[in-house]
Length: 251
Length: 249
Image 1 (tube, rainbow over the protein chains, first blue to last red):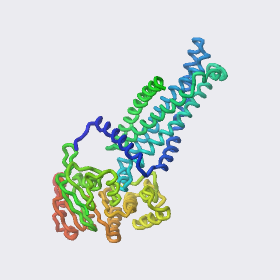
Image 2: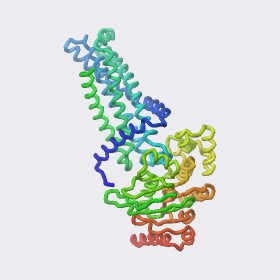
Image 3: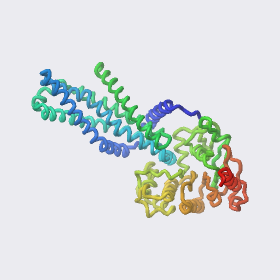
């Protein structure tokens, strides 16, 4: 066995996990109970983070929109611009990134410490395939969780924008809501959910891969958690760009 | 029957197994002794199909482990129970759930049957009164006992022990030791124990092999070790004396 460089090990770990995921996902037993447990767990863990993030993002949009809208006399455009921006772009990126931080890292550290303490080997020795029991439920649950989180984020961010536009600039919500949904056709909304589901899949699978093939001690586990955030941040940006371009051109 | 022929395993320039061969017969307790870091756990992981050797073959009941498919490996592993170092219990599950886990996962038994089996094996390891405790509430020795019950619950043909007494105080080590002896007497399964604990080998082994320089160098019977007139026992005593000499103590 040859010793591998860090980058090579990382690339191999991720590729092996993708291959194993598709190999085992179609083979019984199907871990329905674990998927349900992971769905509830990820929802509970990410709900507050995503909600707080969405409130702050709404404040940010309210400030930028209110300030420059007043400066250039474009207050009537704030409603449609804010809702379009939120649903088309901002919340997708926000949910993707916060999910990578809050849940992705948790997956990496959790599975990494299981690998470190021999729990994955223990499962293998009980004829339980850890990819089926540990990885697949987390990835499938993530795809569904992130859809719900995006829906919550859309609602909270729009509400937060309206509240702070009224509080800081005295713009009533009737003015904001008047034309708010003028650019918002259903494909835009649907596309936002498809894009975030793709992010949920890749973010959770990468995070699981980094934990699954982890070896080392506490310091290495800390480094691996950092890698998980960095890799998944880049993955979220790339997916956001590519899916945004693809859907704008083809759909 | 377990048979390993000419196993080689290297990690970079560190050649751990160098042409190791071993044959373990049915219903015997085979102990592999050797100093820490010599590659005992690597050998055990190879035999269990957790690590693929660079070359060589392993057969369990005539089925090849080294080139087995993923499904075949799962099937072979149902025949093997393994007590890993430190027990490797699942932190999020209590004692009952840890032991019941393989049965619940494989869904081959009803809830009542699972309860009965778990109770039986928790009784064997004398942990039936702690079924609701979580691993963080257990001592090292208790964790090993629960792990032992979990390793036996699928009623395997082979039981592998990876350093079952390492890191335990003498009384906890004694508890684990007596548990292994009890299992040997009550459930006649083939056991493979890797350890650097020479005292353990004296009590439990039918055959004791010394591992050095990536190979099995000597095999002796339990009686020879117990009489303290063996090459393996001498090896361990000399090794300890040499360390004292080196350190001037």
